[in-house]
Image 1: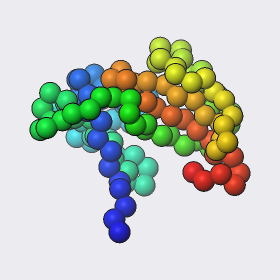
Image 2: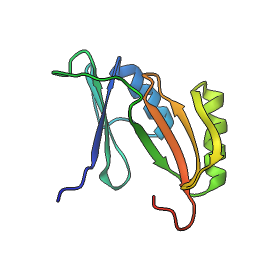
Image 3: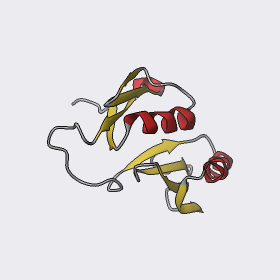
Length: 125
């Protein structure tokens, strides 16, 4: 079986979303054009930002899935929340402890859900 290693988000403006994710992720895209930007993350995972205006047969709406970012501890969850709040990201869920770990949810400029979490010991994640 193959292992997924690439997520593409459909965005209004790849240039604007690319600038947002470059600042958020602390790295620049490895590919950049007016209709597409791509970031290569740890362990080769890729994040693509494709203009929703040029994707063939694109449908659906943002917010029906989440881009999940795992962090090393609960304090980092809280620190990211404070940082993202200062940056003006809309927060949908404040930091909270759930059955799987400590987490919060924010929105990117295209209303894609961004979940930051730290899994509790014994939780899958």
